[in-house]
Length: 106
Image (cartoon, rainbow, N blue to C red):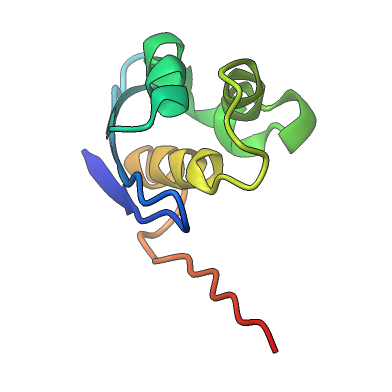
């Protein structure tokens, strides 16, 4: 099981991603815990993904990005990337390392 804690920007609606890999099927089950209405819509439809399809399909056709678009997530929401990273780590396709976006305005 892999857990990703996503701290958002201005909206303040954090999300906890729980990804669990089934070695027999290659599927990764997903649980998204959040107060964000758009992410709850995503959580209702994105309950499991194929690990390899998710890890290696480019963004326009990636099942996570497709579902995020259909759930009407804000285009700059970092959650789809966090979900993909959690899937990769859960399936043993990547090492668990933090991803950081730091914004400054001058």
